[in-house]
Length: 119
Image (cartoon, rainbow, N blue to C red; front, side, top):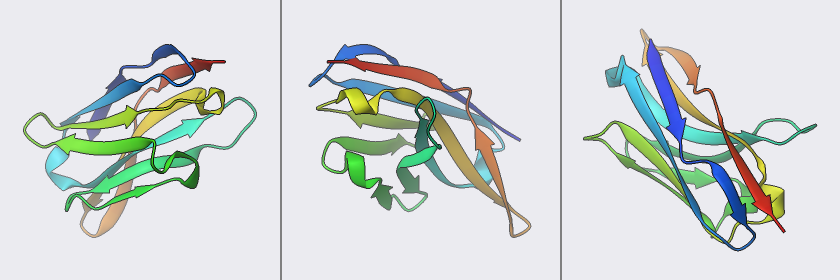
């Protein structure tokens, strides 16, 4: 099992910045990749950014050039630096981890952290 705890959400004005953190614990040695997803009211959950164990990253089109995902392996933590925030970035942000056990993928989710961007 993997436990994920997010922090860093809050209220910020448009154009501002926030940094989200996701600390992983438990069976972290099987984690293959981690990422951030978000879900706004009435919308489907969407990928924001992902990072593999080899530090390869990918981003959703709407956040490219504004958000940066990174990881600190010593702290078992993944970060999402969000700059130039827009009101449409308002959502609950969820940390996700994918682990591989006996060649089978398992997915874990954090509890979510609210990000609200005011115009």
